[in-house]
Image 1 (cartoon, helix red, strand yellow):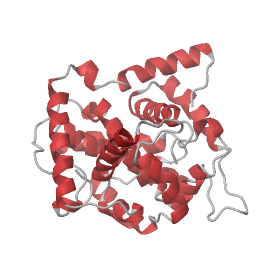
Image 2: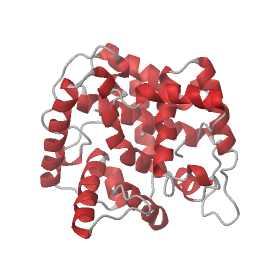
Image 3: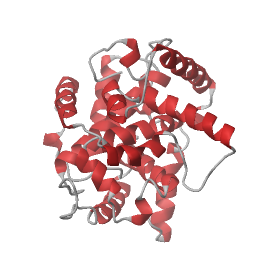
Image 4: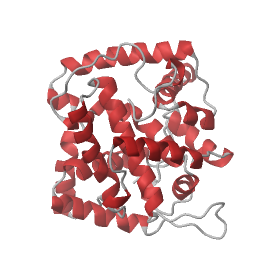
Amino acid sequence: MTLNESVDAPEPQVQQPPGGAGTRSRKPAHADDGMLGLGLLAGPANVIMQLARPGVGYGVLESRVESGRIDRHPVKRARTTFTYLAVSTTGTAEQQAAFRRAVNGAHAQVFSTEESPVEYHAFDKDLQLWVGACLYKGVVDVHRLFVGEMDEETADRLYLQGRALATMLQVPESMWPADRAAFDRYWAASLEDVHIDDTVREFLFPIAASRLRGVRLPAPLQRRAEGLALLITTGFLPQRFRDEMRLPWDPQKQRRFDQLMTVLRAANRISPRFVREFPFNLLLRDLDWRIRTGRPLV
């Protein structure tokens, strides 16, 4: 796993991620409507949020697990992350156990050395809690942006569901904040530990721009593609993380982001459910196939 509104207090529009103008309230039928394929758009921003804790950032940057490095194998890493989301929240006990063993096997190789600028270990419960909190917050943001505002019952159900994003690994349930208000307090306090230094920022910028290793378009197309990716990534980031990444944001960018999300929200609402849920609706089948054929899970 990468070590994918708002639980924050309301902020001015330019600082509030995401949503902006045009988000309408409606009562969703299922809490897991937050597991939408459009959530992949928020993936780079969520990675940045996770790696904004130095222990997580350097754990990923210095990772010895070559096959899981997001900078070298972004597609595979995305599959692993989104499978984790699907397995932890809706998977069977057998699927969760198999995936937990696979993730733990990879995490056993992720620990700091004497040369590392910060101490870390992938089994650190505090860091795992932070990663789970970022994933949960991402699910909430995607739900509110593309489905609509949640009633209290749905919000509470989604919060309980989100707990598994942390507790499927080493985080005990007692560490997960007891309710959404407690989560707000945890999130606000945890922002004090957020810091992205130059080394991690340089590592994260190609992710923010969705720049794929070995893929280069003609210069004008490359600039347009990266500009759009940066707009989406920055739009999904809370202002604190924009500042840490030194990604500029202003009312004009906010309007462009809102307009794009409005179009995508409309397309999402008229799409068949199986289209809206892709690729999450296939990931558990892929996991079963990998278990059955002995292929790597992460």
